[in-house]
Image (cartoon, rainbow, N blue to C red; front, side):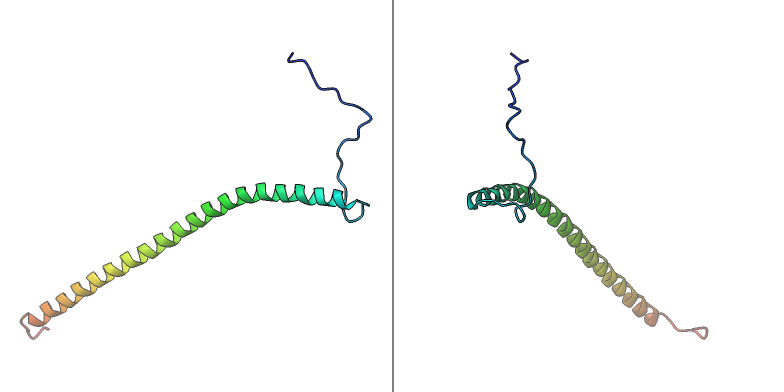
Length: 100
């Protein structure tokens, strides 16, 4: 049973590519071609939609990482400014000598 292959009629032409603009096609044939193209487009758009979502999430994660790192580094700069202010106050309170 596994060796059973369907018989191919040599008289039946195999599907070939045609140019719908130059070929003389009926209205029904053009309609069928458009329906087939639409089905293929819908199938392909589902795959693209998934890829686009994954790409968008990846780009969004990178942007949020940069944004978060920027806020983190700016908050550390405030700490350094506070330390500098405290150092200035400490220097002013220290006793002044002729060398200062």
